[in-house]
Amino acid sequence: MHERSLTGTLLPVILLVAVAGLIALFWWWLGRAVPMPVGAGAAGKIQCVSYAPFRGSQSPLEAGTHIPAAQIEDDLTRLKSLTDCIRTYSIEHGLDQVPEIARRHGFKVIQGLWLSSHPDKNREQVETIVRLTKQFPDVIQAVVVGNEVLLRGELSAEQVGNYLREVKSRTGVPITYADVWEFWLRNRDLASAVDFVTIHILPYWEDFPIEASKAAAHIESIRERMAAAFPGKDILIGETGWPSAGRMREGALPSLSNQARILHEVLAIAKRKGYRVNVIEAFDQPWKRRLEGTVGGYWGLFDDATRQPKFDWGSPVSDHPFWRQQAAAGVVFAVLIFAAALWTPRRETSNAAWGAVAVIALVGGSMIGWAIELAFYESLGAGGWIRSGALIFAALLAPMASAIVLIGGGQLPAFADILGGRGEARRSWAEWGAGLAAVITTVLAIQVALGLVFDPRYKDFPFAPLTAAVVPLALLAFDSRGKGAALMQLAERVAAVTLILAAVYILFNESLANWQSVWLCALLTLLALSLVRFRWSRAAQS
Image (cartoon, rainbow, N blue to C red):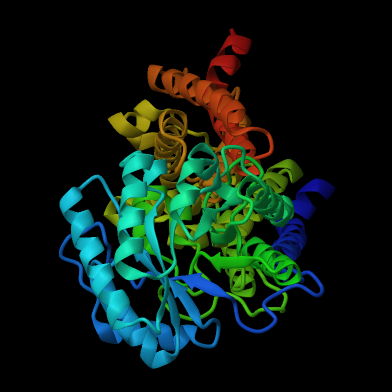
């Protein structure tokens, strides 16, 4: 009698209050502002910043793209408070307008000349650069003849050297070539053709990724190594920075606070030691996501959509600036889960059942705001938004339906029941909802897993929506054991084996340092175990 009285309304209310408090605490922890290193930061203006003018759907990958002068004017107006120098990479798509506009705003330009495997385009670049250097000698400080063309394997070192010598002889301005630091060490003879050596040091993209706490020291170490390798040559760190969003690579976590911290530390070192540094980059570039995944689009100091700075120099930085709204949304979702369970004609009113509902509400309420946030960063194109929408749908449906089924004493249907319409008359809508959520979650989990097995470099780890979906389904699946559920079908067997094998491969391929990968692999394993629950229960019954 005592247990039943508790499970009337008092226990659910107590649990709901506890869950709401834990959700709020979780989001406070996620959203807390991270202090920047004392004494570090951009005291004054940044030396120089890489600039590309593309916004939204604009892309240099499309031949017809042309950036209007007014757009460049607006960008440089915003950048003026941050720096007096910009580095460009090409003269195509309207970027030949940059020197003239930069002159009006008082900028110096490190002018880019894009080299590729197309001789005709290279010739056009050279001729235009020669004209611009003569037209704007007070603006163009130097010319970067080629950017990572050796890394891409499009030209030989000899061909690059020929272009360097031609541009030097025809312009008279300082010239350089820019590439990842390892490629300079492999092609040291190029140093004789340049006035200074331009190296790219991107700790996130190293073959063995460097975690954020060690990134500044790594950059300093590589800069000293390159100075020793090229004595007498000035060294420009032509690209360095950190992404604010995207997937982890081993222990390297993209985040806004990590981006801010690393830039504060690197610029402080550069000021103390007199290094020349160009930061990548001014504005987020969404088009890069098609080449480099989510992470490629979020290296900017300014947000692409708002054109506003992503953080204030010297001030603490939050990785989730809207955490209060996300916490509130999570609490509301938890209330809805409890309300739906309370309104269910109950057959299971034990403390254990309500405890399971509390876990579902806690996980769902904590993850749903994170899932929606990640959808805005990770969705690219119609296909990306459809997948994100399906993940969020599963993250909303699974907790709600599973809580109702748990309290109502139902069970999780087999895939064949959902896809084939079997047993429709004897299933409640909540059971059908849970079954549908299970099908959607499994399909999406397999799609994610196979992507991370066969083409992992730029793939994200959608751990937040999958957590909100998988945990309720797992609680329901294991609770359903021994209740006469249908024997596991072929679809569940194939899915479970696929998920387990993929999880093992991903875990070892990504390393244990990647907590996003570890988290996702745990979810894949939990989902796989949930899919095989009925076979065990039937074997025990027989």
